Length: 359
Ligand SMILES: NC(=O)c1ccc[n+]([C@@H]2O[C@H](COP(=O)([O-])OP(=O)(O)OC[C@H]3O[C@@H](n4cnc5c(N)ncnc54)[C@H](O)[C@@H]3O)[C@@H](O)[C@H]2O)c1
Image (cartoon, rainbow, N blue to C red; front, side, top):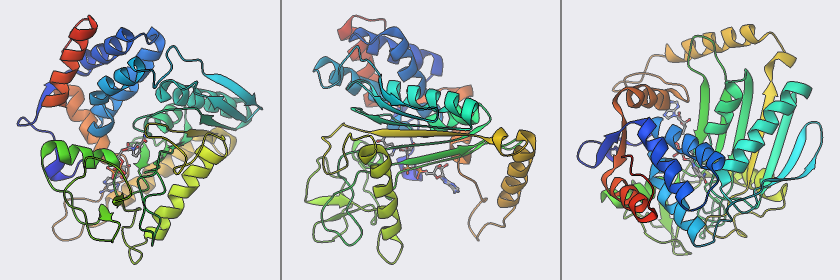
């Protein structure tokens, strides 16, 4: 969820329908040679992020992926190769192409394996950005399964007690289906925030709060930096040792192990900017208990959590996925706000590529 002052509103964005955004993203990607089916998968995931208020990982990124394709950083058309496979596991190569395509296939394979054998898991190397990681567990919840996905990245976050970046912002996403209540979708960087929020703050010209980042001397960084390097790091989740930064740091390394070490694709200290290895898993609930009973217990738990009295000054207690579901309700009905600069950039890029301008 965007912090209050990192919100897109009429002053900094323009609302466009999800349908038009989907067409525009797909057209831009196809304009640089992405096969239609891969462009459609990528557009679907980017539009889902924008609908769910995860603007940092939404449609505004389409132009930079198209540039990475054009300059050869991404290999297009890509072949997602199954390097090895068992009933319950798969090692995939993303083929150095769009990360979305391989992560989507990894979760599809995880779901198919879980349907047949109860559990399915894929680890993916030679990959790039997979966007809002919560998308992939949602594929599992829609199939009455528990889903999990992770992705790593090059070093941006310092280890607890460390003075230099060594770990990526390495997000973890977990989803479980409920009945009448909204599904539980936890989707979180293992740093205090995703790097994208620091980039968004820079574009909107606002400071970042103390606790997100520090200099190599441990001084807080509040002016969002434009570059990466040893002179500053994001803080691991928790921020300081007293507030539990060792736990965020440990979770970040866990992500590196499942995505980077298990696949052989590399960890934070070894990856170049833009390289991301990923991991997906699905668990078939029906192998453990009746699915309706599971969902009904989920509903009871979520209701009890919602009924917790809020602290003075707070409106309500939420569960993971609530803020994004609220965004989705609003944006499905009223359109998706796109940052003014990104709107102009997308239109220009479409025109330059000679593809239809839909927005
Ligand atoms: N692909 C990548 O390389 C990469 C790297 C880092 C992050 N990301 C993505 O960035 C996005 C943002 O990550 P973030 O860590 O800044 O997310 P965030 O802090 O906005 O939200 C984290 C989680 O907390 C939940 N949440 C928010 N407020 C809550 C409340 N009051 N009570 C209960 N739950 C609440 C949200 O539903 C979400 O599941 C995610 O989609 C993540 O996948 C991607």
